[in-house]
Length: 242
Image (cartoon, rainbow, N blue to C red; front, top):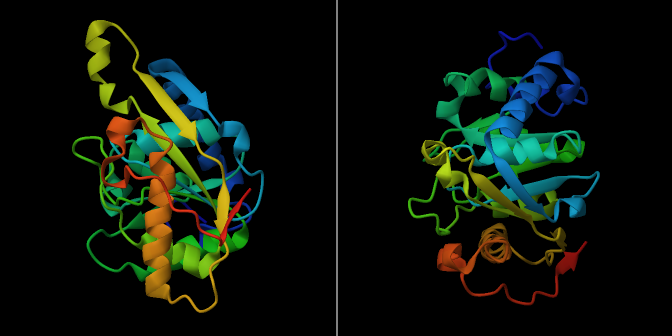
């Protein structure tokens, strides 16, 4: 695919060679270099990352650099396709960087069928998706009620799931005024998979999956950040630990 191909044509996103194109290597190298230079890292649980198979990595969203620094942690481990807001597609620096790596851009506030199909294609190919279920950044770093997109993807594709808690990004770039690099914490939770009952409807699955998944994500965060998902996840017989 040429660089001029409209990014809303998502046929190439899940292509087997998507992560091997020179543009992807170039921009991820740039991001990795900036990541190493600009932030300090505290990473736990990354060794649990499944090496293959369809996977959704989902995180709490508190700063615009969250997906960037998470992608930097995953570099070299497996191909991950991020889902981002449509406004990012033509942003300075991040626009060409995210386009080169096959980012799926979502139009917020309305059904986006092309983006949904692209996300399902990524999972069908056996790649990983990186998504923020809340749909936007939290104004106070606490978890907000999530959208139902995560539940829909699980209902349609039955991928593995892995929560990623992140905090400390809100110190970027203010901490540089104190001549310090921000310390960013990453907590990768244990991967799991739903074995949804056949009689469960899509609407029921969206509700159950979203609520349970967000409560698992909350366990990866400090108590003060768990927000509306402060209660622990219920014991569900159809959740398989991996």
